[in-house]
Every structure is written in structure tokens, then in C-alpha cells.
Image 1: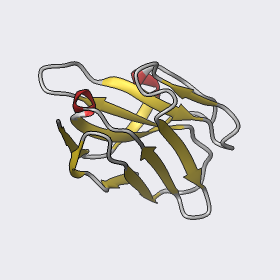
Image 2 (image 1 turned 30 degrees about the horizontal axis):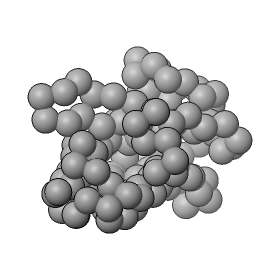
Image 3 (image 1 turned 180 degrees about the horizontal axis):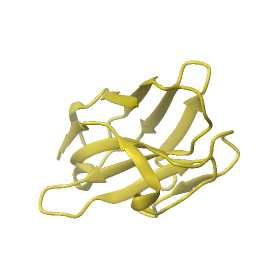
Length: 124
């Protein structure tokens, strides 16, 4: 079993920066891709960013490209989402997830373990 715990959410103003962290514990053996998803009020969950196991391949949604950066520290079993120039439309609960395999994947069904989420609210 794998546990994922997100942290770093909160209330920020438009234009601010915030860094989310996702700490992975439990069964740490294995190499898995990881991702950040978000779900805004009244919206479906969407993929924000994803990375493969070694960190050489990444994906960003068009809405966050150039503003968000996903990174991972496998030695600390942690992934980060650096969010810059936040906008009110970034308001959402942010979830991290770990995939079943090591390769980059964009499909939610390929992610086996999910965190509980951390709320990010961006005021205008």
C-alpha cells in the first residue's frame, strides 16, 4: 500500500506563487510515474502535470504551461508543484497520484494511488 499526502495549499492572491508537496510513504519499492490533478468548483478532475519515474519526460496542461513546474526528488519520495503567477481559475483541490508504471501517462485510470488533496484558493 502507498500513501500520498499533499501539503502547501492555502489562500493566495492572483499573481502569487505557491509550492505544493506530495510525500509518498508505505511501499516505496518500485518506480512509478507521478502526476498532479486538480478539481475546481463545479468542474471535472483534470490533469495538471505529470512526470515519468526518472524525471526526463514531463507533461503540462496548456492552462498552466509556463507557470507551473513539476519536479520530483526520488531520494525523498516527494514530488513538488511550483505554481507561479496564480490566477483565480487555478482555484481547485489539487491531488497528487502515482501511476502503476514508470512511464509518463496522461490517463487518470493509469494512476493507482491518490492523495486526499489540498485546497488552493486564488483571490482576484
